Image (cartoon, rainbow, N blue to C red; front, side, top):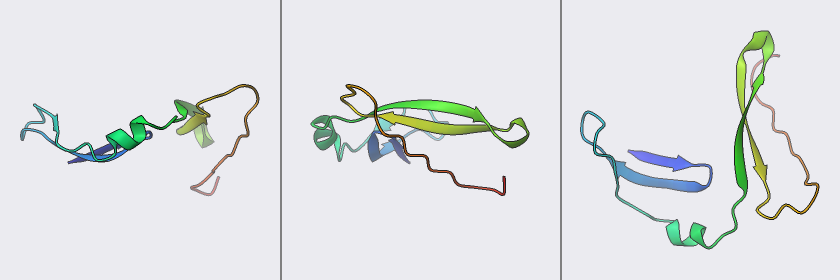
Amino acid sequence: FIASSVLMPADVYVTGSDGSGERRLTRINEATFGALELPRVERRTFAGANGVPLEGWLMLPARLDGPAPLLGQIHGGPH
């Protein structure tokens, strides 16, 4: 299977048929991303229409020395 995170592109992993023994097979971008100053990422949740929980992400610059710009990307349903 392939797994990734906000700060690391996809790599290939393998497990047993029951999900045990997870092992990472590739480290394609590890050196490149290890040399970068990546943002700090925080998961946030918000109450949407009818109280439905919505997930959002706050990405702060690696070097935050004061106010930073905020960009909101809103997508989805009719609400």
